Length: 254
Image (cartoon, rainbow, N blue to C red):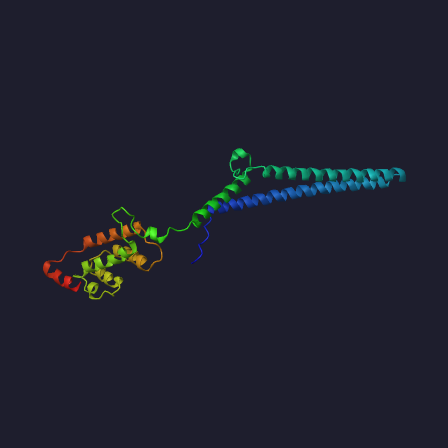
């Protein structure tokens, strides 16, 4: 069995995902630049104060050096504590969300890019679930439903057998239709088209449906069977009825 092809991604979703990626990259780049400039300013300020402290007398110089180092170490420690506290607060808030609840509405206060990302992923999941549903078993598709006029009708076999009905109707006009049962349907149906007994477009539609029923692997549904029967009825209506003298040989051959 061939593996099912992955669902195609709509162009709108692809463009939205690309725009979201570029927006995320720009925000990350801007945030990195701001943090880098802040760190450089803090470092240069501390270095300038430290160099100025070295020009003081030894007693006051040591005191200033210790004060500067302690101040910036305290600042770094406070920043780490603040960042860790914020991280744990966000993690705790996410952990307290109900498992069956997914914030996907604007009322939840999510940023637009987060809302768009969640909506795109949910759409992709919905398409994947729809494509992953198992096909209806052929036994439920290829037979007429009980209690209906088609009860007991095997759609594939009935579609294939319809070629015999068409061959008997064309036999008085197309000898190859009744000469040999092994003659391909395409052969005598093409002869009927050349004799202007069957419309070329109808013949092609019927032949495609016949080949799909006889050689195809897909289940033959009721709609496909009714489509073939409608084509057959239209074709039979356009075939002239022979007189009694021309009909007798056809019955004997059949």
